[in-house]
Image 1: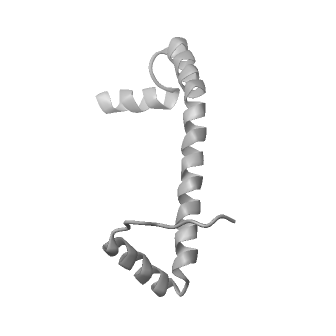
Image 2: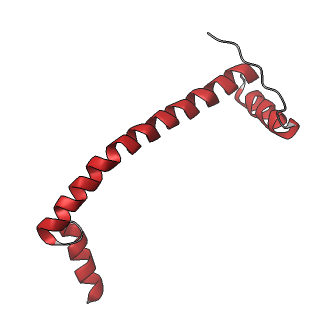
Image 3: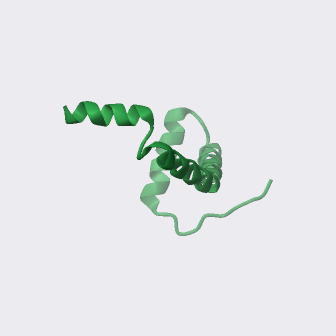
Length: 83
């Protein structure tokens, strides 16, 4: 494990984190570690989504060529709304 020092952290942010840790019955250290892990997981998820975007766009273009804009259910909803 690595060590990290946080400098210039807004005192209000620090107090909010301390209160949350206290309310959850855990240490400030464990709370901050969990928050960082969640942020890293979210960034990885976003990276996977960015990587899949070109494939999704290709699929959407294929669907558009086959039968116009949208999936069959989208077309039905649009037609129903026009009535």
